[in-house]
Amino acid sequence: MYDADEHIFQLRQISVFLENRPGTLALATRVLADAGANLRALMIAETERFGILRLITDEPDAAVAALTAAGFRTRLTDVVGVEVPDRAGGLADLLGVFAGSEISVEYMYAELSGRAGRALLIMKVEPRDDALERLYDAALY
Amino acid sequence: MWNEAAQTLPVPDLRALQLERLRTQIARVYDRVPFYRARLDAAGVTPADIRSLTDLARVPFTSKSDMREVFPFGLLAVDRDEVVEVHMSSGTTGKPVVDAYTRGDLDLWSDVMGRTLDMGEVGDHDIVQNAYGYGLFTGGFGVHYGAERLGALVLPVSSGNTHRQLTLIQDFGTTVLTCTPSYALYIAEYAAKQGLDPAALPLRVGFFGAEPWSLEMRDEIERRLGIRAFDIYGLTEIIGPGVGSECAQQDGLHLFEDHFYPEIVDPDTGVPLPDGETGELVLTTLTREGSPVLRYRTRDITYLMPEPCPCGRTSRRIHRLMGRTDDMLIIRGVNVFPQQIEEVLLRVQRVEPHYRITVDRDGTMDTLTVEVEMSDELFSDDLADVIALERAIERELHSETGLQARCVLVNPQTIERSEGKAKRVFDRRKVTTHV
Image (cartoon, rainbow over all chains, first blue to last red; front, top):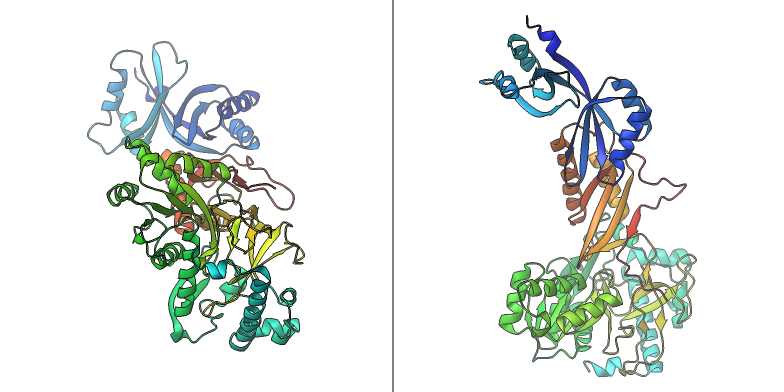
């Protein structure tokens, strides 16, 4: 029996501004470690001049407080996490849910270590409510 | 030598001429310019008090802000109808400074710019490619008038379009190049990229100014283009280019002091210093008709070299400029003050008013980088938003200063705070010559 709530998560993602300077990423991760924030997923978006570290942790409030105290600029963004079966076509099936809609995936990344047989994908989707509605209505398994 | 009589006048005769002209000039501006009359009255000085050149020290200084306050014609010493041409500074720090020329002033400008180009023996056989900007800026027209006076053929190409500059040099056999020193190097680089040997171009001499440059840069220009490179000096407040120039000795710049009287003063106390001592250059125009200036504080640091010059000119020389008394930066010929950049940042909002300006030279081009601290409100998870903000700041900086700047957003608190005056400007071009 498929239970959508077991597989779809509304997550708060932390975005961290990274200057283009050696050691910035190392410092940010050290600050997170000292705050006891385990990283469940992360990605780095980079441009020629700066980067943005996006991450999911179980302790977002503590992580934000520690990063801010260390002089980092942060922002919380609502993202969607979806577990898909760890098999060929898992992601394609997921994205197929949005077919024919105006929903766009702005970016996506994967959890570092998922449950066995499952992959957790983190997505920034717009419009978010429409995306969630479609995801809850779809039977992904 | 162009106008040899004026340029080789024996020193005692030169001093007598300067005093006579100074007395006439002060009497004239006292009579015609309410601004100067009020200044002199307030200082308790009448034109009759000026009996020697040292009495000039009793006359109050004129600053750039004085000149801006009376924009556009508050310092005019002739009827507006007698003004035939106007040039002005870029006005980057507020109202521009206006230089109003009568026919007599243009004649003077042609003569002193003729003297300048004559330092490199420019004559009717020469083709002068004038890559200074034509327009309100003084550079283009000043060089043009001087070259015309010497009978040279002028290519009034103005600045920019390097490919065309190079083509013209080849097609016309240009012998004289006039532009900013960094642009001269850029042309050399561009020629090399086209597979040409820049030293084999027909260029013979060049006259470069409007921005600070080092002796190393001069060596490089001379070597790469195979020319003699002359350092020239001038400023809008006095006449534009044509205030002074190096001679073939390339050891200090002769000031055309029969028209522009120099003093060196202590920048803090304003007290005149003897020849040879380093301080701020102060200039008084002796013969200008439209826009005469008394004791203008140039903010340029140098010293006067009174020793006779082997070239035979009897005018004193100034050492090539050694710095500024204010924080003005000259980048690609454009004057920029840090507070202009601060104003842009305040206007853009959303960013912290903490910034750091770095000027560097990348190859031959001056670069301006402005690092700005990111604020919480500013930071977005969206890369495009942050990039758009950097671009918006760059656009604003360009419209304020006319320069292409690079904006880099940095973390809060990365820019050093300090008690009192923060060190916000880092000039890594190393153009300042130390004594």
